[in-house]
Length: 212
Image (cartoon, rainbow, N blue to C red; front, top):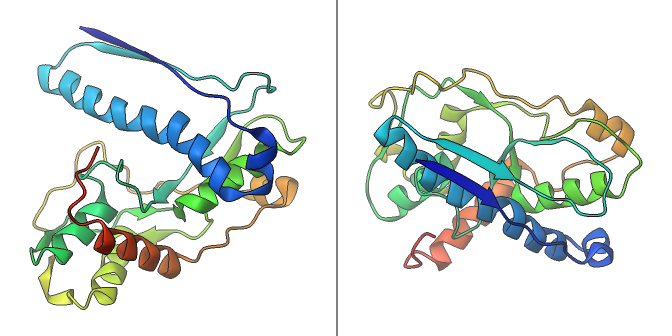
């Protein structure tokens, strides 16, 4: 079996350059939508141990740049439920236990509004070539989960080491954002604690909403 994914929209560039909401809407359509679909398809192909996937994106009318994204902290109904942030938040909100790996993996997280803002800044700049988007603040998965549990007053319902880390789970994934900071001149607006608080607030308001 094979899958070809090719879709995208050209958003309102002027609106995206002046407001995070417009940039975020385009990001959801062109990035989050594609990733959500690809995640489901990839799991199917992995289960059957065969197949291929071809993904085609478009930045019509724009000169080529390679943009590499860190993990996003998203208040978003399209976020796959298996991802660590929505999994832990939803589990603890529902009164369940959050069952995690050892949590020593180091990651780089950004609030999704900062991701949209950074993308808009890169597209509006004269910088060419690869640009990493991230926070430049590595955090362990254990520390991330503990921050969520502390905000929900549910520290006693988090279990570390009860799930085995996947063989493909890299110990360190951190973005080198020197070009983003020094050449593009971008800095994140959301701290990790504030981003998690906003995400928790969103899930509290949308607990009954099915994930896409």
